[in-house]
Amino acid sequence: MAALLASLRTPRGLIVALILLVFAVLPLLTQAFDQRYLLSIGTRIVIWSIAAISLNMILGYGGLVSFGHAVFFGIGGYAVGILAANGLQSAWLQWPVAIAASILWAALVGALSLRTRGVYFIMITLAFAQLVYYVSAGLEAYGADDGLNISRSRFPGLIDLRDKASFYWLCFVLLLGTLWFCGRFANSRFGFVLRGAKSNDQRMMALGFPVFHYRLAAFTLSGAFGGLAGILLANEGAYISPAMMSWVKSGDLIVIVVLGGMGTLFGPLYGTIAFFVLEESLKPLLDLVHKGWGEYWQIVFGPMLVLIALYARGGIDSLLGRRHG
Amino acid sequence: MDYLLIQMLNGVQLGLLMFLLAAGLTLTFGIMDLVNLAHGSLYMMGAYIAWTLIGLTDSFVLGALLALPVTFLLGIAVEVVVMRRLYARDHLDQVLATFGLILFFNELVRAVWGPAGKSIAVPALLSHTVEILPGVLYPAYRFAIIVVGALVALFLAWLVARTRLGMLIRAGASNRRMIGALGVNIELLFSLVFGLGAVFAGLAGLMAAPISSVKIGMGDDILILALVIIVIGGIGSIKGAFVAAMVVGQIDIVGRAFLPDFLKTFMAPAAASSAAPAISQVLVYVLMAGVLVWRPTGLFGQRN
Image (cartoon, rainbow over all chains, first blue to last red; front, side, top):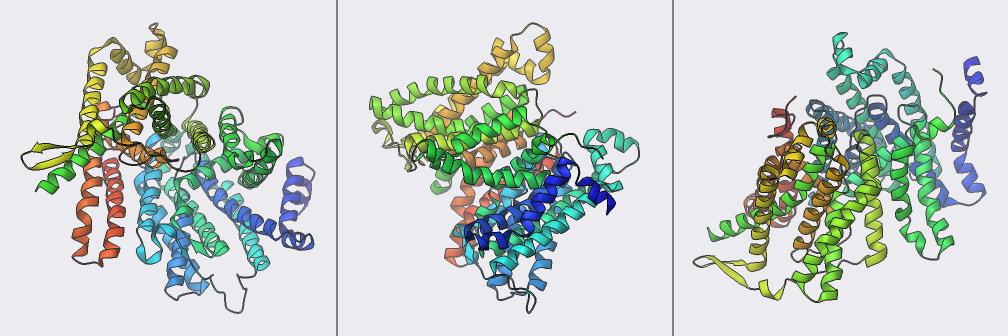
């Protein structure tokens, strides 16, 4: 508790506390100011943060550039959607199945792709994600390319996911859980082995650590949390489609993690907020400069990514001063 | 039998188009060690530039021929402004920056040419069919693509194996810093190679335009297929890219042409015709996974 209070005195701790505070009361704020739209953006920010944190586990801490992470949006989402379309709506069934499917897929893809490195790893993770994408686009019974409207998961007598505020709070609690887990993960022996392998895997192997197994375990864990984000995303829109896992979404997730600050606990959170705020604010800003330009906001956003890649490697987290511990 | 032959020719034609795209990609990968996701954007830009120039000159051949130097210049410009700052960076930076370029080019096209797709008509000269075997007719335009594609492949093989530039390219692929130390102007070499890759990508884009359509994001899906091809073939290997492109072309076309009939023997017709393209796509990725498990650096990649 004392350590927690002490961390509030640093700018980083203060900002995290502020962000989490605002997130905790967001439904009350949006209700007070009658801005329903903001709540739905807030929900998506929370869900995407969970996915970004899960990608950060392997990308940030492990140095493994997975270019197919959005596939877990799809696997989590389709597991929920397919069960719901077949009349199985209990979340107690749907959610464990969805997580298990994500874990299985992550373990399979990890076992194959972690044998390769560098560019080959980037490409093979992308290719496996595309594989699932094309399979989902071929599922005639579940809407093929167009996707499928589904009914939301049911927690009978516990929580109604159709209520926007309750759903938001559920997502928020899950985000806190994910953050807690990732914090423990990063500072555990397991996390340190992974970080060691990122800077020098030969040396870690020489020290006797089975690096492949550690990486596979991390990849699988990351997939499980990615699947959780997929479950939530499907429930948020009550809709699943192959577009959930298009490779552009995987690119967006990488952008978010790098933008926020790789290998930092709260970086993915900053990154997601910044990404969504940029998306929502560039449009009106450009429209202000010249009517009609807002539609083309990506003409500005694209070069911004180039500049971030070239000049801002530390991400937002590094703006908050040096880290200790 | 004739049907099989025609479908296989279609596979060759698709394979050659993808080879044009993959050749530039594998060269920039091999020599500059650059992951260029924006290569598909050059494919798209080639098609759009050709559409404009064909409209202006009222001639397919003239427009297409003029589009090539323009795409070359565009490639050089992209290299000078963005790419050369990325060579020394790690792959993650390259992925991020070229992903940004994709967004930029897609949106630029939407702003300049509008959101609706364009179409380029098959040139009148090639709108008939040719008799490739007695009684077997094949569209002349598709046949022309095969001829041009094969010529370009031969030209590349000659360029890489027989010329001074090719010698530098091969030397650069095996040891970049050494050829710099030997006094070769690396910056110029890299710009040239990138421009060459851009021309091939643009050529593929404009040749594909009359049989598909010119639309935003047209380069993105085929780019991923081209990436798969160079990974199967081995990064940096032109020969590998050619072999893999041919195999992938056959899988894709034959899958689309024959799987529906095969699936209909045990599936509902509607489900079969929507599942078949998906399955043929999946086969390509399964092939890639298999190759990488067997040989983690591709069929013709350097092993170290």
